[in-house]
Amino acid sequence: MAESEAPRATENRSTTPVSSTFKQYISEHWAERADALPQPREQAPFAAARRAAISALHPGKRLIIPAGAAKTRSNDTDYAYRAHSAFAHLTGWGSDSVAGSVLVLEPTPDGHDATLYFREAAGRDSDEFYANPEIGEFWTGPRPSLAHVAADLGLATRELGALGAVIEAVDADTVILRDGDRDLTDQVDGRRLLAADTESLETDADAELARNLSELRLVKDAYEIRQMRLAVAATKQGFDDVIADLGEITAHPRGERLVEGTFNRRARAEGNTVGYDTIAASGPHACILHWTRNDGPVAAGDLILVDAGIELDSLYTADITRTLPVGGTFTEVQRRVYEAVREAADAAFAIVRPGIRFRQIHETAMAVIARRTAEWGLLPVSAEESLDPAQQYHRRYMVHGTSHHLGIDVHDCAQARRELYLEGELEAGMVFTIEPGLYFQPDDLTVPEEYRGIGVRIEDNILVTESGAENLSIAIPRTADEVEAWLARNGRAG
Ligand code: GLY
Ligand code: MN
Ligand code: MN
Image (cartoon, rainbow, N blue to C red; front, top):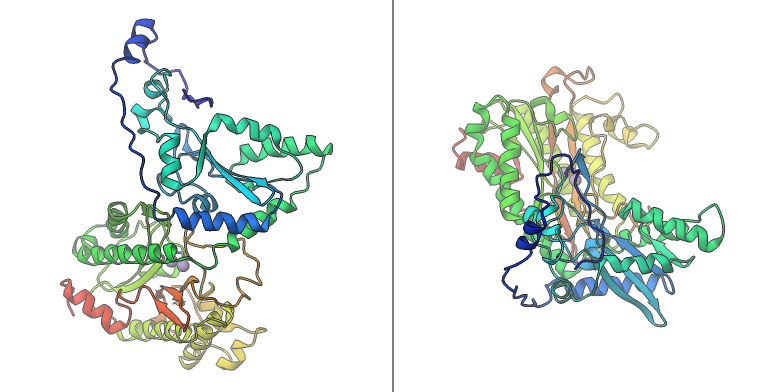
């Protein structure tokens, strides 16, 4: 029987029989389960190498990396469970992670011993399996055994109840990933305050762990690169589906919702889910950078900006944007804007190779954006003057950055230091987006009327190679001509 105390739903509407006859009856006559142990999953040796890397950075420290609890959506319903990204990275456990699990790296003279604590399958000797709607097997499905997960992930496992002894042992040399699990962090903080006999806690070592875990993901290993390719390929299918459904989409008053639904159906079928809320932004909605309300129509004369990415079971996600002329062809001004954005993306991609600085990608894209908007007479100064850090008029039309790292999180490596991120040098194995855009708000009096309400973003997922770069999403049509041909193949009038 599981040692850890399991959560319970409120009792006020429970109809579970309480008679001892029932309890006895439901506990008996279940077949033995054959639990054939799996071979270690493909990611297991990669996760072991990542644990070794983090171990080397924190000698002599007990490291606690929680997966986190399920998050409440409302009342007694939760969001779909998603483990903390650092936990997933160090364990290789993805969408099949058990909520509330904790990875502990216990220091040894020559490194650390890793143990994964989780709530294993409850036996028939407990009433959890039928009476607990939150985690009971009859309610939410079976959980794996300790032996199964140990074999699957190549990691020592222990029942979650045994974590109590780890908490008891917490001392000043214990470090926790604070945003993994707030409740557990509070417990650890309490123990550390006691151990140090003080009222104020020093959390610098915790911040250093969070930073190191984030920086560990800046360069992807071979497994991660394979996953990114798969995520992009699945995402391409989602975009193809959206285009195939455009007839139905334009006929519906909430066409943007259908775009989201079509893409998300593909995401659920091919992977785990979407890596972030799908942006389906038609017409002027495309000027709202993170338009996820998606409740507008999709009209034939509009451009629709679709920013979407499929997250695989491993939790790696793509992050891709295409902007499509719904009727099949760009108007002259739509094409002008579109091709300027593409030129910015192509110019940025062209400089990517190991050794350049991450921020140069953005600077290169911005030089094109400044040049084109100046050429169209939109800026009060020349492109060169606008590019002066003290001026930046062109940024009115693209207020976001051009690139971010991508991986288990859509905005990956978010705690990495600026000197390794924006100011960092590119290395082979890094994966990031290049996503310039131009957004002319419908009420922007600085632009001629024909530009107003046009929003364009083109977003690709880029892998740095030893000699340069590879656009992982190049197979998704991206030039204006390719996009029109893609739509024409799907029956949109050319
Ligand atoms: N989908 C959010 C972004 O492109 O960063
Ligand atoms: Mn992005
Ligand atoms: Mn995006």
